Amino acid sequence: AVMNRIPLLPYPIKLLDKYANDPELQVKGKLLPVPSNQKMNSYLKEIAVICNICKNLTTHIARYTFASLTIEYGMPIDIIAKILGHTTRHYAKVSEANISREMQKIRSILNKYILG
Image (cartoon, rainbow, N blue to C red; front, top):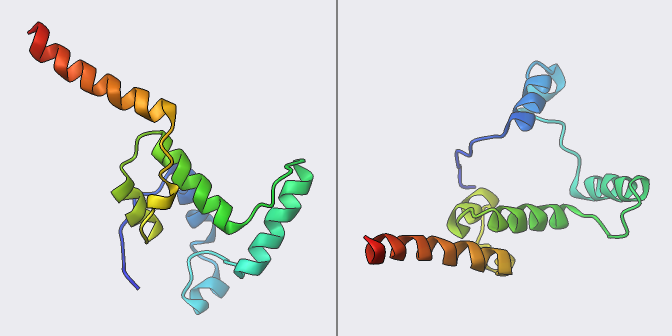
């Protein structure tokens, strides 16, 4: 296993704080009560039903959603790959918004040099 340091957002930090002193987790050497992948997918299916989501939610879909959103908001693919722990090129579907944003960056740079 490869160790990485990844900055956390505020809500995950709150979750870690919630379980920080849990004696059962301390004995297991874990930070969070993590169910099996199968159980997690079962919970996600329940959430989909409750929220009337007509999609088969799975942990894989969660990873895919994270990768897609972070790409859409401009996070470099190499950083996303590091966070997810593998290559993520198959998540990198280029959207029109991404193309437009990147072309705007180039346009701004070129305008500085052309217009002085």
